[in-house]
Length: 90
Image 1 (tube, one colour):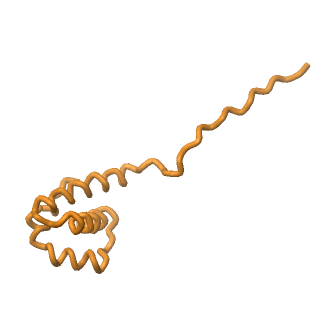
Image 2: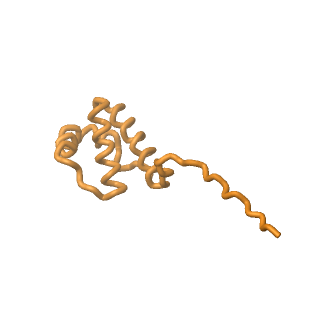
Image 3: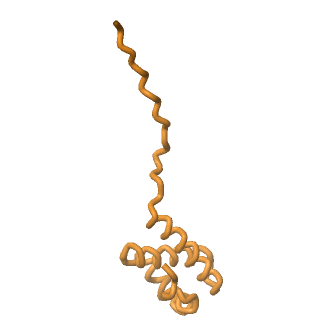
């Protein structure tokens, strides 16, 4: 008597991008919020993006800003304070 063997089911191919973790999703959401607050205070889009990255990386990853980011922080210190980014709800 012959045994029946079922074919191995085909695994769906997934892309090479892993699902974002909760931490990464929170970082992205808070980064966008941070950027928006900076832009509302008059910081140019490009600089606001770099500042938002520096601030969120400091908050979530405890990383130090790059020399460029340090320069932007000193240049836009009043805007950062006016945006009340220290009171971001995390």
